[in-house]
Length: 197
Image (cartoon, rainbow, N blue to C red; front, side):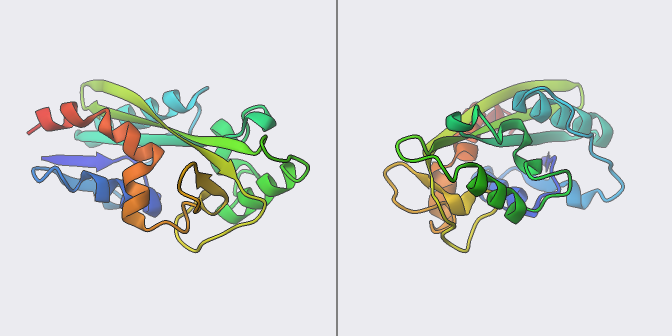
């Protein structure tokens, strides 16, 4: 059975592919397999809205089951920023690096213990007939004052998950994929995905 990851982000696709490997019956595709598909602009008021909108639109348009994610880094000391705007924090066409630089600048005066933050991931799964489920996964930690590590993407090189003492960019991929916000959300879809077999 085909399941489309409704994303063109190669890093997200790679992570979700690795996590979905346990479902041997799934043939996992992504939006990279459908170059003529035009994704919806992210107009939702919440991460949950965006994940649901993306999953439903792709499922209906491509006539396949889809899974879509919207994730934000939430820093309470910054009133919840970057949050919903994590991917565009430094501007509409900002790179991951631009976003990290802006976050470091915004947090320059913030000391421990106020440098806490958490990743919040919403994963939505939809059939061509509509949304089936949307779930939330959270991963809490601390935001560093400088980048560390060469792996990962987004804000990974600034985020240290509690108890691990390493940024997501320093952790081995299989470790990150076992403990991340995305993994926690996907675990909540396990029974539904199993039932598709």
